[in-house]
Amino acid sequence: MAITATQINELRKATGAGMLDCKKALEQNEGDFEKSIDFLRTKGLAAAAKKAGRAATEGMVAAFVSDNLKNGVLLEVNSETDFVAKNEKFQSFVADIGRHILATSPADCATMLEQPYSGDQGKNVQTYLSESISIIGENLQIRRFAKFDVEGDGIVGSYIHAGGKIGVLVQIASPAVTDANREVLQSFVRDIAMHSAAAAPRYVSRDEVPADVLEREREIYRVKAKESGKPDAIIEKILDGQVNKFYAEICLNEQVFVKDTDKTIQQVVKEIGATAGGPVTITRLERFVLGEGLEKKESDFAAEVAAAAGL
Image 1 (cartoon, rainbow, N blue to C red):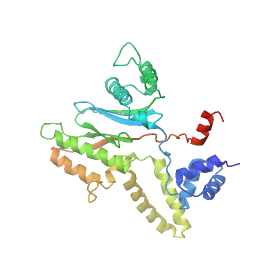
Image 2 (image 1 turned 45 degrees about the vertical axis):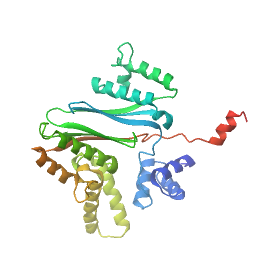
Image 3 (image 1 turned 30 degrees about the vertical axis):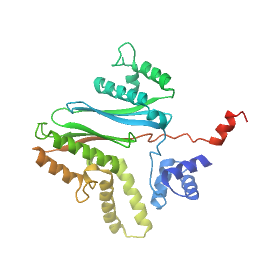
Image 4 (image 1 turned 60 degrees about the vertical axis):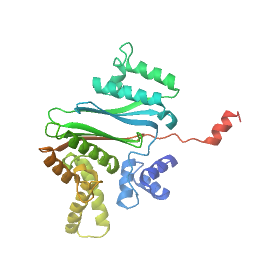
């Protein structure tokens, strides 16, 4: 099949590999994007499998946690420009939507838009969104949200980085919150959220890693080991080591704690449990990067000026 320049460019941006290598990968995999990424990785040509793509839109990620620490929301709302994202009216709109989700627990964004807006029962959320677009003067999109609700003992905490570029929501199971341990637990959850903003774990523990994701990694390691000429018996041992390294990169509990690199997160969890008066477990994690997975429109400034001038 014919490979287009657009396909080659997208693969180059996703992997950091050279243009010719990307072209070859696409040709050998009949244009399949994911298979082409794996092909480049097995050849050691991909700088990184940046599957999600680069940040694409402006706006902000925000977090909202209830006063009793039992409920939390992580929300992304997009705007057209960074200038509007810093606007007080935009930030107020984001806060209103976050509080609405915290109060009403909609199933998804589409459902939420049809709900009566909790701040004004005379309109639904879609109407409030449309009014805000008119007032602010830019297109706005309520892109996604995650809501955590604690059943039993435990709390929710959050961390927002760089004014809304990255947001993390964390839920833990813990001893009942008391005056004695409240500050310790809140500080711990914030530290875990802050760590996650920097270290970007994909799962809390290795038992959450899907079998197909693990097998994909094993196959990449297997192909690379075979191409190096190593015997099959040695290859399997190498695979085990590579898989453990993979777990340490993507699983929160096995990552090295960014605030104390002599400890893993799991070790920190055990220490906090001793301080808080009982076992602590990280149960859920959600991490949003602003614009992640969306393609940002490239601006041709010269063409825009020419068009405005009627040239």
